[in-house]
Each structure stands twice: as C-alpha cells, then as structure tokens.
Image (cartoon, rainbow, N blue to C red; front, side):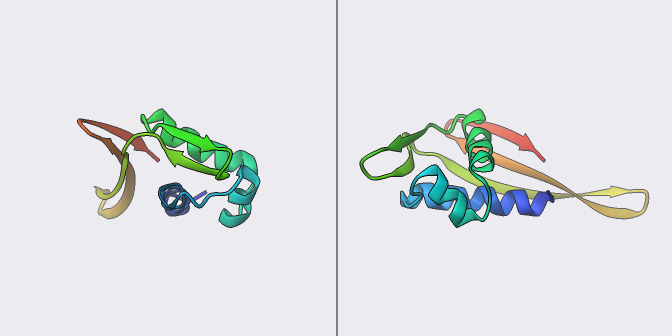
Length: 102
C-alpha cells in the first residue's frame, strides 16, 4: 500500500468516526472498500497514538471518547539529487504530540 493510500484511508476513517456514521465494522469495511480486519488495523493505528475510540451498539457507530485531532505532514527529502517524499502522520492529542511514520 502506498503512503498516500494509507493517509487517505486513515483520513476517511477519522471523518466517519467524527460524524458517528461508521455503522458496524462490516458496514465500515464496505464503505471504505476494504476488509473488516483492515478497518481494525486502521483503528489500532489511531489507538496506538492515544485516540480513545469506542463503539456505540445502539447507534451502531464508532466514536471518539475524547477530543482527538488528526493532522498530516508531507516532508520531502533531498537524496542524491532527487526529491523523495517522506510521509509522516502527526497525530495530535493535546497537550502531547505523537508521531507515526509510514
């Protein structure tokens, strides 16, 4: 999977969680065009950076238990005369900053 695909998928998951419009894990996998296990892998990426994610059974949706902000940074490295993308996902939860490198 490319860096940009991962970023797009995590951003989409973040948006659906914020809207509380995920549905079940199976519904979410269908919405994202992936499998259920991949959805849980994305959720684990967020959780590993201190996002507190719960599931509301009556509303059938995932949600953030505490405020959480997802921000992306794209860094370009100059290596041997070429600009090479070096993508980092900055996951910010006030007051600490957590980094996930792809």
